[in-house]
Length: 384
Image (cartoon, rainbow, N blue to C red):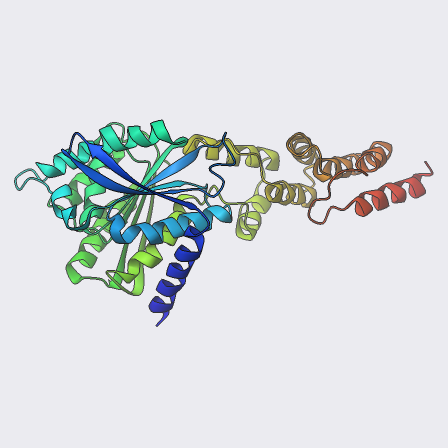
């Protein structure tokens, strides 16, 4: 019952979310395949309005049925900033999925139509998307059973074509379970890999996933970020609705705003400067996803609050200075800069900093009244 409810919830999210974003259908004439392929493309909500922004790509195989759950979750998580807004590219396959993803019976690598499809994605589709849309240099591929096996072949390119792999109940080709653990340690770039099955999955496929997990789990490292789920009660098809959001959460965990858990379990236990943690977090986002985002207001408040509680006054000053630069029309930077001056023995500077922000935009709990009250308290206490 819980699995069914989860599935319905995800489908409702998909329908509601996609209605707010832009869907495009395109016929792509492929020289590699010698035929046209239908693409289904979802652009982010602000794509037309924000012409300077670039977006990661999510490539969805089996788009006839996988596109909606992937696109809906991408839009939903992007809306709440739990992942970057992204362009979703669905390749409609239908019954051609078996020929598209076919491999040789002797060496078990893509052959015939499977080899053509491999080149279609790498040499035609991705360059086309990069040329016609504003893309960041971060690509995720999503596949289910037969197509989940197929996306693994791109790990053997140097460098791999995709940065992230969402493998849902893969129907692995022979020797793939041996080749992947051998290949992955040799990859120098950062790779995200998500594998999922369910306790009610097709028996053979569940066993394949369990065996592959045992081989990949020891490889988890700074360059190979690996996650595995075996969903209780999930069937071969219902696990898709549970696996996609789980995969997106795990792949983009560093991108999310600072959570209560990150605040209490990481930041509040740090001995190093909190300001450096904030800088490193956004440098990691830039390095991994090719995105130069302004630091969120939420993250400024979280790190400033932690710096206050841990008496890291120099960190507080540095973070407040950055906030003042990023959000000059708000009270954010002024408030925490005032707090720095208060705590480091410069009450007159604190008072003037608070008073100087009287005409700025309020942020969260930081109101103009709060700023002026703090200024008045200093003025009364020190007789200025």
